[in-house]
Amino acid sequence: MIESLLLNLSNRDILTNAEQTTLRQIVTRDRFFLVDEDIVSEGSRPTQSAVLLEGFAARYKFMADGTRQITALHVAGDFMDLHAFLLKTMDHGIIALSACHVGFADHTYLKDITETQPHLSRLLWLDTLIDGAIHREWIVAMGRRSKKAHLAHLVCELYVRLKAVKKTVDFSFHFPLTQVELADVLGISVVHLNKTLQPLRRDGLLTWVNQTITILDWPRLTALAQFDPTYLSQMVESR
Amino acid sequence: MIESLLLNLSNRDILTNAEQTTLRQIVTRDRFFLVDEDIVSEGSRPTQSAVLLEGFAARYKFMADGTRQITALHVAGDFMDLHAFLLKTMDHGIIALSACHVGFADHTYLKDITETQPHLSRLLWLDTLIDGAIHREWIVAMGRRSKKAHLAHLVCELYVRLKAVKKTVDFSFHFPLTQVELADVLGISVVHLNKTLQPLRRDGLLTWVNQTITILDWPRLTALAQFDPTYLSQMVESR
DNA sequence: CGAATTCTTGATACGATTCAAGTGGAGTGG
DNA sequence: CCACTCCACTTGAATCGTATCAAGAATTCG
Image 1 (cartoon, rainbow over the protein chains, first blue to last red):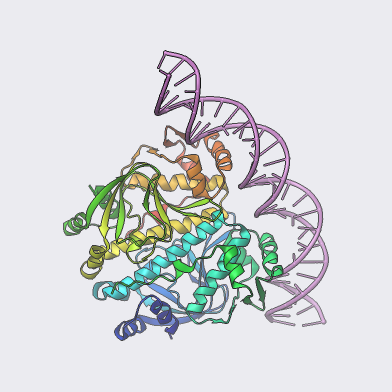
Image 2 (image 1 turned 135 degrees about the horizontal axis):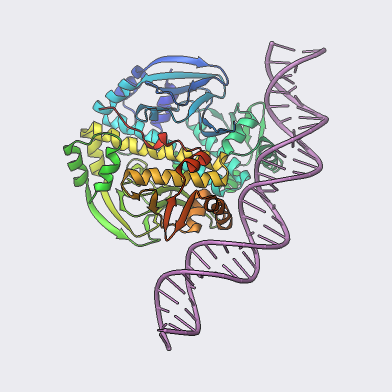
């Protein structure tokens, strides 16, 4: 069930059989969510952390005027709110952007891991650190990239992350977001997102039809985005 | 020497004497940096992590066209690149924004802590998670707040963080950044930063003279910023 | 098939950048 | 001590980017 999580973590460092067993054991419950359902809601104090086993989800925050900012996108294999284990109250919500299969791990088990399995703890810590690295790239993209480059960068990032959990076929991947949701990721209006998207299509960098994105020209896309995947492909090397 | 770090961490949970001793022991070196000196450079693979003992520093990234985005601001007591312990290569640089006193802790010592001191490990992990929470707030601010509200939010955040390490006097705090640097935080041009700043001054929300910011009207400033300090005041409660 | 979303387009207004110039204060050397 | 230089801050004008509003086209769903 949690194969994608194992895949995700083993990209960082070798997972022993014992560690794999531990991970399987701590995910004691699972549930399916429909599109637009809240998986975790803002302000709650969860006693378990959610692993995305299948589907797309987003961390988001609403502003007083009803606008929304998505602060993170999650794909299969992501430990979405591992940070809630220590950061007791959720400062944001998590919503299902497609039908989602989600596993849950009690915080007591996670605490046990920190007490008894240092290597696995470091691996989980690393997972939250990569989250942070992605946040920083997003900040850079929002502040200093053109919208076109920002969008290109996001596509590159998603491609690399999805490839790591075997959710790509050649240069294609399933991408169920609407343009409204994608605009909430970039922090722009839908209209402008739409107009930003067009040159990427027109110039033959990518296609996006039937909830499927296909990258047509990886070299030009990464060049436009100034994409450097280092922040995603970190290893621990600390055993 | 590392009192501000201890102060910072004890805002999260009680630090035992043994833990305080450990922290004092692992910071084996310290160094002073001048304004604009790089404390850690992008792309390097540090074998130690830097604690800011005194001063202001920033994590930043340069774009190909020479523009810069600051992704984090650090104040006294911040473990600035604790994440470098697991995230081996620095995906950004750290620069001194004022004269800085910096302590260094070898990664081997940090690894030892994860092997033998689970509670302290969780506290350090929490520290990196709060970093992440701040990043998310910045993303929200960049994407969905007006520039005026974004600036106000930053001032609120800095005030709360500096107060936690006793670097405020009433509603004032030392703030040595130039407007160019502050513009690189918000991701806007200096000219526009200057024009964004003026209404905050004119409306009597704050003053900024002699490298000192004074908040004149905390209620109106927080209301404008939609500032909710929850993300900064997280406790572990996990002992 | 009709209704509801989602996507696309155009027009207008506002926000933000850039360029260019000017002000003011701090530090330096004669 | 003054003149000079440097740097940070401030201002205005022109241009470009982005939001908003409104409507129409395409797609999906029941």
